[in-house]
Image (cartoon, rainbow, N blue to C red; front, top):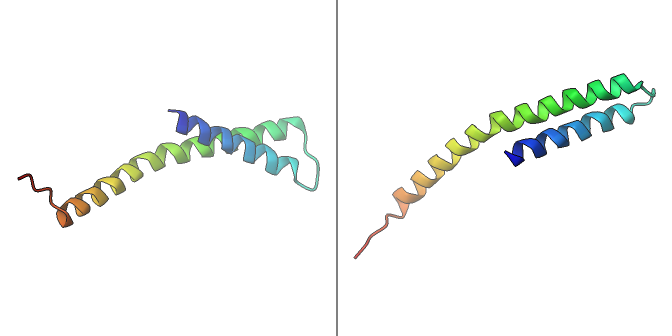
Length: 73
């Protein structure tokens, strides 16, 4: 759960930072909107990335086990 919150917090920081560094200074409401959009993108990315990584790890482990069978003597 903490990885998802970290991704969301990073998204908020990037969203607010990008709005803050925009050449035309924006209002506080636009900064909050940019932070909300960045946070939702960060959280959404973390939620979608987690199952994909699990599948990649399962395939990698299966291939490794096929090449390196465990033999108990």
